[in-house]
Length: 441
Ligand code: ATP
Ligand code: MG
Image 1 (cartoon, rainbow, N blue to C red):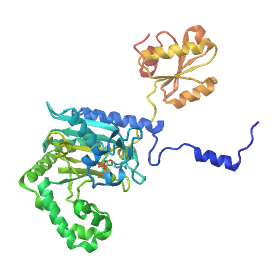
Image 2 (image 1 turned 90 degrees about the vertical axis):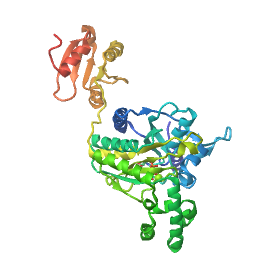
Image 3 (image 1 turned 30 degrees about the vertical axis):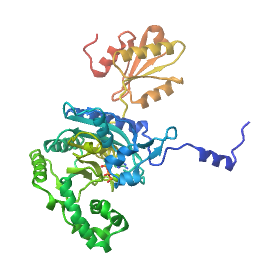
Image 4 (image 1 turned 120 degrees about the horizontal axis):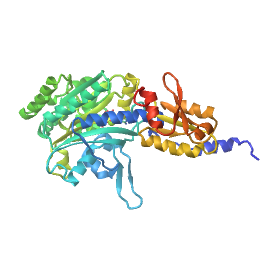
């Protein structure tokens, strides 16, 4: 006998109901199709530029990110999911980005020993940020790295490659911002000038800025604080400190972008969040996604691999935020969201289920994608499932068909028609029914 739940009981049940971790999303099957299609599109595009897959662990030693991203960055200061493995005391961190892990793997396996490498990786990354539209605690990136190339041709290749992707995806309103960060000595001279300038305007600095004044004054230029904007706009520009080689590199990138017809906005304020960047940095931004409009960011990091203990290895890469890219793509396109299914097999009656099982395998042998109805039910309810499945045809097997060695085939999309065929050669018959007459008698 069952009693109605008391309010206490139902409250207790609610409290124990298991939920995903805040800011970490499930991708349900209806969205899964879009993710799959996106990944197929991306892999084709990457292959067409010769990029090859690399996979590194989701967990890395915390020290890798501290050294590889920089102590005084948003990520390392406040966004990492770090913990101590209670079984052995190891300090571990869920990767907040791919580059450090790929750089580690490059060193560990001497990856660029014989030749430079074009690699990509795709998967979840983790940052402890305030969840909102376009900003999650687990999100996905496509990360692309060109290791062992000094550029500027490779810098331009990466950017041109991205512009092709947007074009192929039908995304028109994505703008490109670029900047040149120069080399360490140039940045150092600029940094000194910045500190002097900010010290002269100390009364306008907020807490964040004061804290960063000596550790990372460059990041003060990134401030979103409106009361600091005018002062920051008047700060010394890095471009005034660039030497001939940096300028030549930057000109080289821009010339190739011009040749390719890729438009860009030069943004001297673009510094990007990570410590290790030099020379070329860039971002692709859209206004169609609200405030989280950056869908891709990248840059050169010639010093990183050496900082992590490897041989000096020039390199450049970028990361695309896939949630943001997918949202933008779905806004612009109405992609097909039906499953890629050919046949739904409906069966009822004693003995037919056994035959349906083997018949479905025969159809798969012939190359069809087939769902065999499971869970019983009458023809009517099974046909409803078939209709909802997105399959091109239903193959119907009842007692009569079983005895006659036939199967009924009903076309589910477009003009509806139904015909009966011999079970032998059924795949060819379905093919003929769907794609035209002629081949079969
Ligand atoms: P933002 O300024 O938006 O915080 P970021 O500079 O921290 O971006 P990158 O480290 O360059 O971002 O990461 C590359 C891309 O990953 C971003 O351009 C964005 O599309 C995406 N991204 C970054 N953080 C998140 C997040 N918390 N949730 C979803 N996507 C993100
Ligand atoms: Mg960020």
